[in-house]
Image (tube, rainbow, N blue to C red):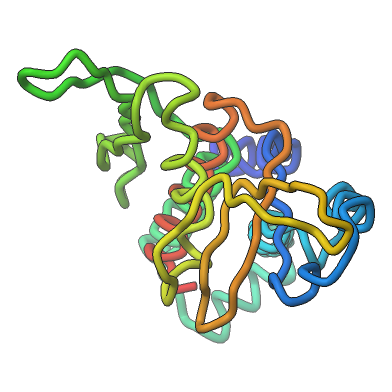
Length: 236
C-alpha cells in the first residue's frame, strides 16, 4: 500500500478542477439603481467576490495542497522517526495510517474527477423524462460503492433551473422561494432578465450563470456533492 500511496499522491498533484460553470451573484440593492449597461458590465466582470463557485473551489484546492504536503512529510525519514519515537507507533499502526492516507487521497481525487453516470427516469402516466445522476463514493476500505442518486429535473435544457438550485444549495440554507428568469426594469427603463432571484438570510440576491449547458450544470453539481461527502467524512 505504501507504493500505492505514493502514486496516489503523485496523481493528486496533477488534479485540477475544470470550471465549466460560472455563477455570478450580487445583492439586489447593489444593482437595482443602475443603468442596464452598468449592470451588464458587473455581471460580465468575474471577481473573487461575485463568483460564488470560486469560494468552494478555493476550499477544495486548499485541502488538496494541505493533504499533499502532509503525505509528502509522512515519507520523510525525520518525520517518520519522530512519529515512531513520540507516539510509540507499531508496524500495525504505520500500516493503518498509510491506508488511511491512501483512502483520503482516493476520496479527494474523486472530488476532482467524480465517478458517476447519468440515466433517465419517468413518472408513471407521464411522458416526461428526468435526468438522474448516480454517484459513487469510496468506503473506509478504499472500495467504491453507490452512494446515492439525484434527480436533476426534466431531461435537457428544460431542467437547468433545478440544476442551478442544486449548485447553489450550499449557500441557500435560509432562503426564500426562488424566482427564475426574473424580469426587471433598469433605471434607464430597459428590460433585463436574471437567471435567479432569491432571498438569502433576508437579503435579496440575483444570479447570472455563464457556460450554462445542462451537462455543465450536472458535472459541477456532482463535484460539489462529492466535496460535501468528503467534508462530512473528515469533519471539515
